[in-house]
Image 1 (tube, protein in one colour):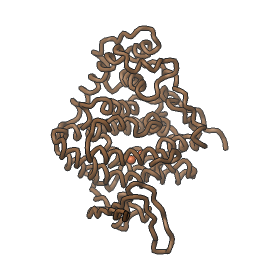
Image 2: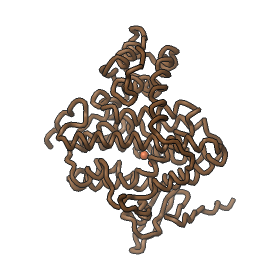
Image 3: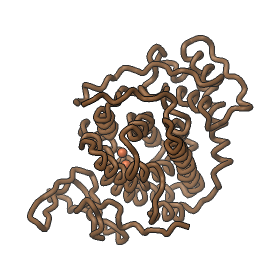
Image 4: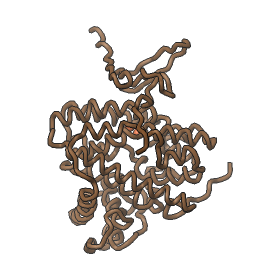
Length: 64
Length: 336
Ligand SMILES: [Fe+2]
Ligand SMILES: [Fe+2]
């Protein structure tokens, strides 16, 4: 039985959602592991916890 | 700290805060259950909220000296129903009705440029004692984190159920007991020199913090309120990540250990995922399957926001006046 393809959801507004535990290779050669059933990877480059999404892509509102 | 260090004994019954809670506590002690009329009771007040909280606790870990069978004692359930009706009627009165779930979510997903609230205070100005007060009150929920929402699982079906269980599985550590959020919370309590025993701070916790938990139990235990439960769940998962980051930064500013900040650090990352799952895999399929639930989803979101604002107002006002935000002060932190 071939393994099922990994499912990746491109949200468009924010992160990539990757199914299953994942090992992520970083630009500096290091790796990080996420054991979550679904991992959210930052695509907006504003996250303070790279490579993971921390909701920094959210729109900001001026105080009324 | 290992998991076995956390005592599993049922907590003692709390002290009464007025006639309603006195009646419920007497009933649970086996002295006869006679709830006085609720005419003048404040539905958000200490007396009613503690009375309701104690009724609900029979569905979780119970109380020392109260037989487990009392969970389904019709006398307790009848009294609980009176208290619930008053609380629910107040929320239905105070929360504007709506049915546009998408607009509600959009509003929650906008971060204010100048955020306010307890997490901002604790990030920038709060001291360790205020962190301890915050965590002690939040322990009423977080030591049973995700449990009230688990009651909704059999009330859902199909993709919405699978989506909700994916999030709950993560809350319960995805199969690793040491990663359970309730366990991370207990570790934070120990790091802050608080007692992680379940229910330990019930007497110290004022009504605004109790009401957030009774609302979850109310919605979780009533199938008729399943839409509101999912709305409550969504409101927490959508708003928790930015606030958790501020709490981590506040703890780092105060030089607190990684054991203390790990609970909120985990929620920065986990709730960024949970937000996506709740919107795409819970709310979307739920509303496709049961469109009539939209109004209750909005109600659940707005009611939890209202209760969160009341809790925030209580904390900030107490601290602004230089008072404790608890009913009884904490024991001082031991020197280390
Ligand atoms: Fe959590
Ligand atoms: Fe979560």
